[in-house]
Image 1 (cartoon, rainbow, N blue to C red):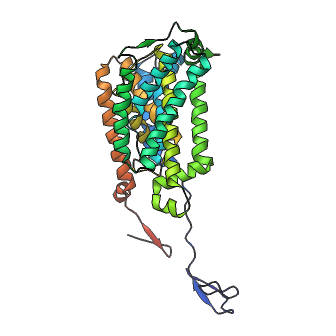
Image 2: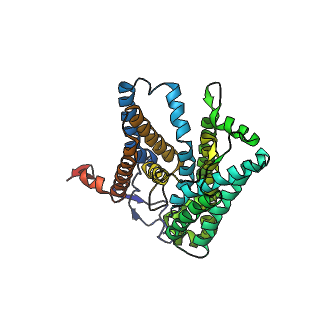
Image 3: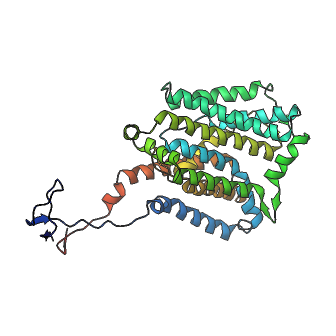
Length: 362
C-alpha cells in the first residue's frame, strides 16, 4: 500500500514541502540471488551425472591415478581456456590460440637445442607468446581490424611459422640438459599431488582474483557489456583490449611449455580439436559468447566436464574419432542454452503470478 510521510515530505527535486502530505510508493524488495549458480547448474548437474555413471561402470574412474591423469591431460586446455575467458568476456575471440601454442613450443625447442640455460629457455616462449598476443591486440584495438580477421590470420601465420622454423620436423628435447626442470615440473609430484595440479590451482586463483578484484577486471566486463558506456565512464577501451590479448598470448606461452613438457618434444603440428575444445569449455562454463559475463570458475567446470567425457570415452573403449563430434554437440547445446536463457525463453515456459495487495492475479 502507498504510505504518507508528513514529517519528512520532500518534493521531487529534494526540497522540503513544509510538512505537506506526499503520496509515496514503497520500494519493492529485491530478491537476493546468485547469478553464477544459475549459470553453472546445468553443467554441474551433467558433470555429476557423468561422474556417477562412470564411477559405477568403470572401476578405475574414481582412482587417484585416473583423476590426476585427467588433470594432467587437460592442463593445456585449461591454461588456454583461462586466456580465452578473458578474451570472450571482452566481446572478442582468439582463433589463433592453438597455433600460437605450437609456435611457442617450437621456440622453446629451439632455445633448448641451442643450449640456452633453462631459465632463459623457459622465458623465451613466454615472451614470444606475449608478443603474439600484443600484436593481435594492437591490430584489433588501434587499427580497428575485426578480431575474427586478425586471429584467423594469426592462426594461419603461426601454423606456418611452426612448420618453417624446423622444416616441419619435431624437435626432441628429452636429452637436453635444460629440459630436466621442466620435465619434472610437468610430470612429477609431491606427496602424491602432481606439481601441474598445484600450478593449475594457483593459476585459476590468480586469474579469478584479477577478474574480481582489479580495476582491469572491472573494465574488462564493462567493455564486453557495453563498450560505448565504458568509454563514457572513462575506460580506455583500446588499452583494455590490448592487455586482454596480451594475457591470451601469455597463456599460449604457458600452454606451449606444458605441452612440450608432456610430449618431451616440440611438435610443429597444431591439434585440430584443441581450439574447439578450449572455446567449448569456456562457453559451457557460462561465459556469454556476446561478452560481458562469465568467470574462471565456470571455465574450470567446463574443462572438467569435457575432460571427464573424454576420459569416459577412452575407458569405455569408444573410438577417439568420436571425440570431436561429442565436443561439437556439447558446444552447440551450451551456446543454444545460453542464448535461450539470455532471451528469457525459459522464463516464458514457467507461469508467473503477479501479487498485488495480497491477492494473486493470473
